[in-house]
Amino acid sequence: TDWLVKPIRKLVLPQGKWDVACILAGLLFYYAVFILIRLTASSEGFGGRVIAVNFIFAVLALMKAAAYVLFIGLFVRMVLSIKKPYSPVSVSLQRIFESVLRPFVFLRVGRYDFSGSVLALALWFWLGYVLPQLFRMLNLWLLQECFRYTGERKQNEKSANQYKKHRIPCK
Image 1 (cartoon, one colour):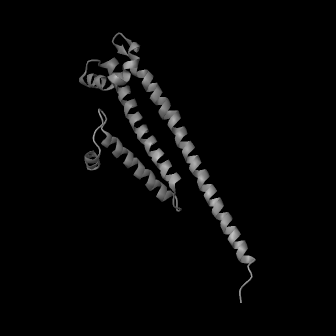
Image 2 (image 1 turned 180 degrees about the vertical axis):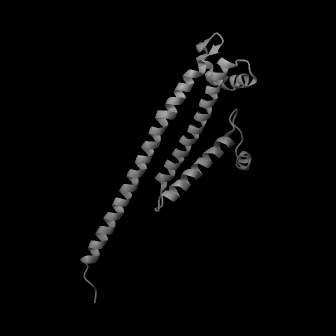
Image 3 (image 1 turned 45 degrees about the vertical axis):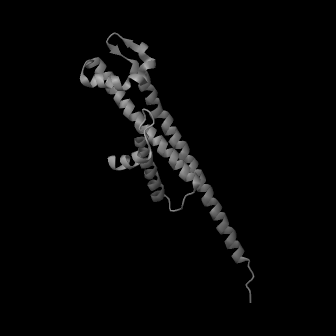
């Protein structure tokens, strides 16, 4: 991803702990994907609403990718905390997820660490229920807009055809 991130990193500096260039590169990538999908799926042009919805789709897709990475990392961390609690991978994952799991420290029982289970369940709910509902609602809204636009266009064509039928030819 250096070919995409390096030019953006020259324009946008990191903000504290956040590497904004990577986030912006992911957002641009997903936005380009949704624009391409829209261009191939629709023969009609698109206006400001569709551009805004594509941006929302890109933000949601980036959040979905981040949630999957967190979910898989938490799952691996939970399994390793039971099987091999002192392996190098387990220690690295512990360091990575320490700040996220700090509110759930009370779920550590002896050598078993269940603190990631609450966050994993929340991510599972987000990935399995909330995000699909958001995508479905946005798609339905776009379809309604599309049908409204085509209905208005058909109505305009119909009235233009009626005008042509009842028009008195000029001599």
